[in-house]
Image (cartoon, rainbow, N blue to C red; front, top):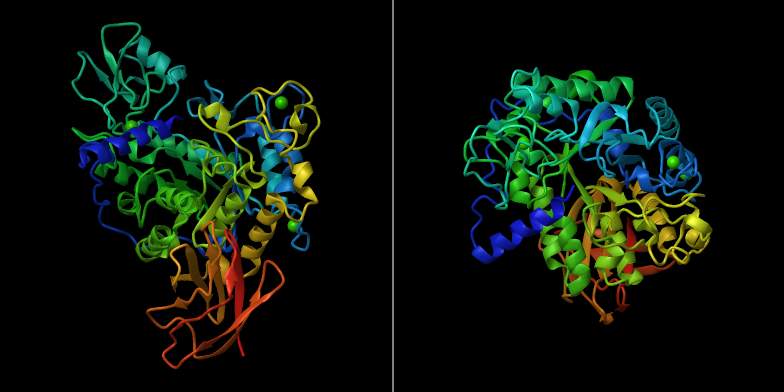
Length: 555
Ligand SMILES: [Ca+2]
Ligand SMILES: [Ca+2]
Ligand SMILES: [Ca+2]
């Protein structure tokens, strides 16, 4: 999907015009009555505790048969790279879950335009290949999420072909039609009513003419969406879904984004999933700021991606200024029920992290360190862990995984479906695998650290005031356990930086401060009777882009 361009356009409009008609829309209140907020079951919480997820584009991950296209058997072969299922080994990435971009049969290479929701994309293999992948993932403790695109189908989908050809067709009411061209434009000013190629009429498609929107006012469409979810949960064995473009699901007169109808449908859809699979996890794409995300809680999907935090994290590294990032995390923690938000650096619609950071690996390391020590459920986009690069167009954000310096980057023994990035021979898993200074090694250590330290995995969050504007400092606390992170996002050393909390942070007493990612100790931290941290200097000199992650231990 090309969501990025449209939303980028939206933001420009909003900023330039200083008002936001249409763009982003006015978020409606969630439907009432509201059932109990806590719909997350204990076992769902279990796999999420300290977990990191890994986003995969199957077409680009690993090709098992030499046709140049990544496939499900290839992904199954590479599962040990993601997680080998053995808690005592740390040479795997350690991810506890995978999100697969669409795997259903579709028109386009990316899969966001389904032609058959009940069949795996034939380039990727068969339904049985998918079931074997799920069995092998589960054997390793990996939760499997698949992308689910409900807003629209491909214009090649049989439902739409039939409805287009015959006004009396069974699926006619599954789409929206008009006999004359409506004046209505889309949320970012685009054409949304498209001329039928077969008769004098128009149909609605918010993204483009090749993706007609389904009409969720039609009860049979809502039932079909639930049936598709049931199929993937019970027949195919998945553990949940990443839901594409959820704000656009249900149109109402004069309103296309975040409508009351959309919230009502998400509520109905999530309830139907819970009835089938109480532990299923759902994470939605609401590409907007925190305030526009909040109406999607507490009783719709479990989680949503925090685009705000992603943008602010990249900006903090670019600008050498972390304050806005730290403040926004605090707002997320305060506003989102039970920390039900998902974090990431970049996804398949965005310039890759290393490219966004000007190719500076030290900055990419610090970005990973912040992402994986801050709260939320973090997602890592495949290849990010080795510093793969890529910029628009979309295909270049989704290039084949660079496994080795062998021909085809070890991705295929044939010709890759999309050409490799120019640095494929030097930036690879093989090159970084045994290098303790590599980005890959850092990702592995951080992901395992998050799993092993409950303060990082599930602890609360408190930002500290630092005397230097380039230093990010925060506490993660879980009961008596506490981890302090101090990072210099600037390009010069931060000398004798003092840290302070406005409120009580820890129990009174003396704490040792031991570094947990590298060897080393920071100064002792003495907490006075009021529990505040005052003028604490953990270390005399924090180098540019250096982080101190220290475990505080009360003695
Ligand atoms: Ca293949
Ligand atoms: Ca392992
Ligand atoms: Ca729609």
